[in-house]
Image 1 (tube, rainbow, N blue to C red):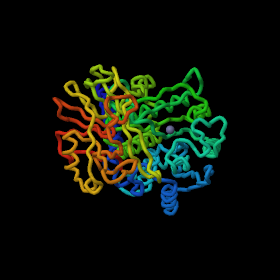
Image 2 (image 1 turned 180 degrees about the vertical axis):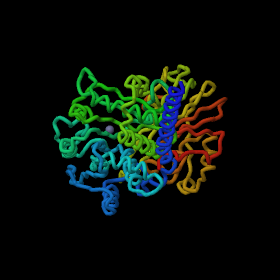
Image 3 (image 1 turned 30 degrees about the vertical axis):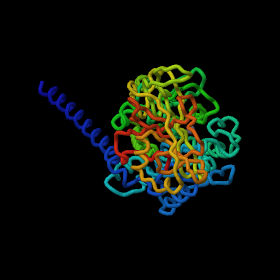
Image 4 (image 1 turned 30 degrees about the horizontal axis):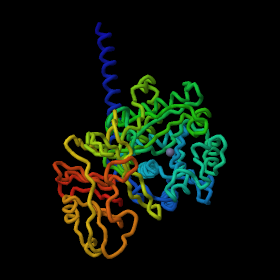
Length: 492
Ligand SMILES: [Zn+2]
């Protein structure tokens, strides 16, 4: 009796000890999260960095002998594609980012991770665990020509992620050759997706979406794909503490043109990570941190092989990626069109306009939907049941008067019903304005008289003839608030 009691006690103590150990380890990745600013690569401050910065950062880590870097190919325009290697472990992991040139969020996170792994502080135990068990093989910015012009495709105008079979692109060939040479157990295919995806039919942004790609048309499951799925479940569990409800899964239809699907078939457990949107994070700097956290959790789990405890059935509970968001959704607004007055909804989407040097972005907001909307949401939403769509007026003034207008004066003009300025002594330039509220026009009258699909989102919402909101190139300005609260409307 005593014996079995002590056995029971032993078992209980062991369980408690294991739980405590687990707690300690879990805490360590979360403590890194708290210290993230130490590791955030300061050279990269926004999404539009180029190959030059990437080379500079690679050099920083090779000079300190933290990584080995080897050129594995060059882009169509002769820019180097580099393979960075670190860690002495048995499990080979291959990560590549930015095969689509305008999808840079994970590249930022990869350099933050390198800084973390190269540092020497209280997180050394986690570093030792990762670098002792994993061999990390990283190809940052696989498509440097695309990054240079902030575009998806390479300079042959081929989508590298549809080139896994033909291997026409030098960038795709470099990746395939590396994968065949390394034969990694695990691969991470790192992308960005539209910020207009939601996690299921909800208003939650799909901040990260995952996929363990299929390797055949019937979407079969084998040990290789199972491991990828279990790693996704591991990251999902951790991420729910940071971005609850904002993780989705991508459609798993097989596409043999894609690298993820092809690698899965080659025996590499491949995980697609798509960085999407997050409220008030247009530069994706918070999503960068989320990527860092997701990958660090994955590395820890690979090192411990703890992902094997994940139950595949839980994958069903991750919501589907669903394109159901607008930048702005105006509900139940009264509009008048073709002599008919009615109430409807307006979905507004802001499209990106590249600066001439591809180093920044401004935005052009347009009406994309007009009519009944179901299970769709907006980053900004206006309940406009008691509001009426009202065209803005054009204020005439001299160029010097326009240049002297303060933000408060601009706001006052908008409250009076003006949305445009026309210079009386010259022609105003086309293109985006920086930090202005009013738009410039050279037209005598405002052509935006009612809501139309494809039309610029530059109008007022009025109550009893008084403007309450202004839509400025697709950005919402609440006219009851101070001008200090206004976002930088025409890009940055
Ligand atoms: Zn992509």
